[in-house]
Length: 211
Image 1 (cartoon, one colour):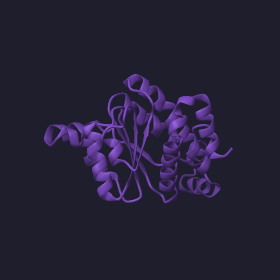
Image 2 (tube, one colour; image 1 turned 45 degrees about the vertical axis):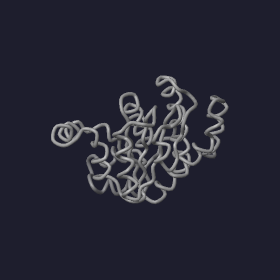
Image 3 (cartoon, rainbow, N blue to C red; image 1 turned 120 degrees about the vertical axis):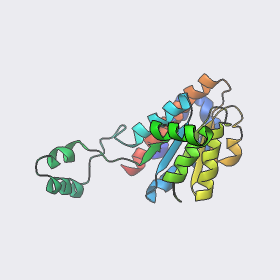
């Protein structure tokens, strides 16, 4: 199956998304280029969007609809590294696409909140993890989440690409990101309902390309 077939299927199932096909395609191309060059995806969001960020990591870092078996050469390296457990690791481990949700580090986040400035937590993590060629995906239903926008500013300064996932009019994030996928809804829960099939399609497209 070709990666774009998943996008065709998405539009068929959700015709309301037909108007943002080009934005989804551009987001896919940015992510594919990142992974082609050995980069990492960083993700940031608040509330339900934080859950979406974690969800995306779960789809990218292990098999989604494909088994993603390890290369035979690395299976052999595992077996040589540990004669007791190497075979089990070789059987069970799966290839992943590197992705880090910036929402999942409570000690760092609360320390930065307490000691410095809570609105800059994602920015600090982006500074620590990010490098040129990586991608930051910011999820904000309004497009105006300040902590996500701060992270995008840092990403831009580092030479990273940025993707926004939003609704309504895209907010300020639309002006900041290399591409912003703006689903055609205005109420928060309805925006989030459309975010899920969009990022599922992106994850399926990437898995098809690389595995």
